[in-house]
Picture 1 (cartoon, rainbow, N blue to C red):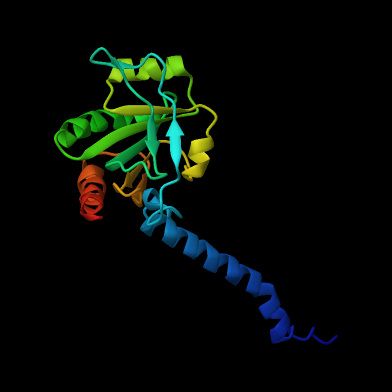
Picture 2 (cartoon, rainbow, N blue to C red; picture 1 turned 60 degrees about the vertical axis):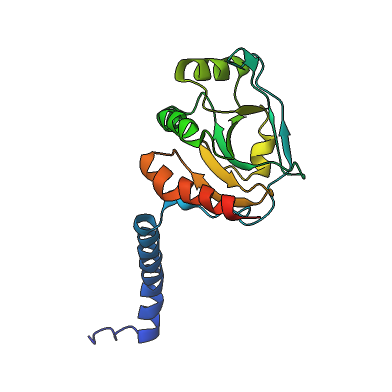
Length: 198
C-alpha cells in the first residue's frame, strides 16, 4: 500500500496563516499595552475650541460664607486659563487625586489660572459631602447630572483634566488621577503653554 502524498505547500500555508495573523496581532497588542501611556488617550478636542459649556452651580456649596458659582467655558466668555477637572463622589480615583488638587489650588493662587470642577453624573448631596469631607479646591463647580457636558467634552471616565487657554482653546487633556509627578510633567507644562497663547 502506497503512503499518502504530502499535502501541497499551498494547503499548509492556509492552515498556518490564521495562526500567524493571530500571533502578529497579539504581539502588536502587547507592544501597545506595555509601551503606550493609557493616560495619554488622544482627544479630538486638543488644539481646538473648547465646547461652549455653561453649567449650574452645585446647590448648597459654600466657600468662605459665599456660594460657589457654576461656570462657563467657551462661547467667547473672554475668560482666563482654566484647568477643568471632571470628578464624581462615586469615583475612587477621584478621592485619591483630591489631595493633589488641594495642593494645586494653593499653588495656583496669584496666577491668572482658575481651577474648576465638573461634577459628573453625581447626586448633589453626595457631591456636597465629598467636598465637605475632602475640601473644595475649585473656584467654581458645575453640575453635569445627566452627563451631556461630559459627552461634549469626550469624557472617557473620571477623573479627567483639561487645560484650556484664555482664548478658549483646549491645550491638553489627561485621563486618570493626577499625582505629584503628573502635575510636574503634564499639568504645569500645559498651564505654562496655555499662558503663552494669545
